Figure 1 (tube, one colour):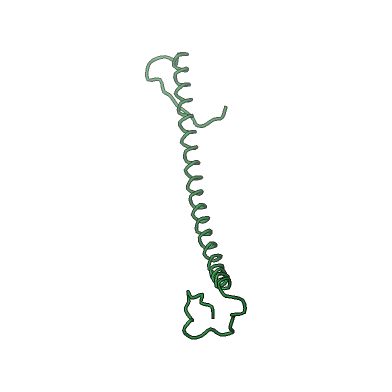
Figure 2 (cartoon, rainbow, N blue to C red):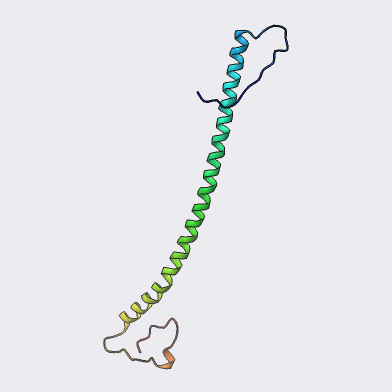
Length: 109
């Protein structure tokens, strides 16, 4: 059994405490100890939940940044790959004609 606190009781009536009084005070002390322990556990759970929310936000932010950083170079690679699949063999020029220079253009030069 673990000591949680101290309960002091004063007998305002004449005479010592009876065994029934001692039993009642013991029950009250036990219930108070359970309530105090539950309150401590709730505080610990709330603290863990707050820390978990913070870690989850950091994870989400990291995933968002990592996804963007990976997607940006891959998009241009995928675009060039799609363009190269559409070009007939041997039709590649070293410089495209001026009218076909558009960011989204995959015209065969």
